[in-house]
Length: 149
Image (cartoon, rainbow, N blue to C red):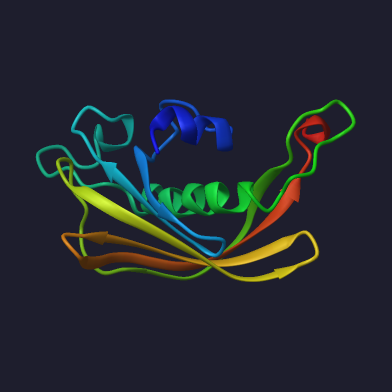
């Protein structure tokens, strides 16, 4: 699945859409791919001469993969016809195991563990060359974009 299809499923746009393509997807699991480039805003100055992808950006990749996964489970719309949007409410057990650098292509995995009403509990991980770079547990709730001020 291409970037255009991703943008049909989640509200993120460049420069904050952080996934390039969807490799595979089931009802409870998704695998996406992202190639990081040296001109991306978040590596400018992080760190000069030794750029690395910030940990929060790695987490955001997992959150976006989770949002794509949940798009098929959130078929509700608000009164104005806008789609409902999953919003991150919690990140736990975040661990960074290896640095991610510009030029790296990563696989981003998100797995839906549980749904309780409008809350979704997921696990995410990012791998570089098949080796774990980051891992986290996170939760999302459904938000109606017309109620966000």
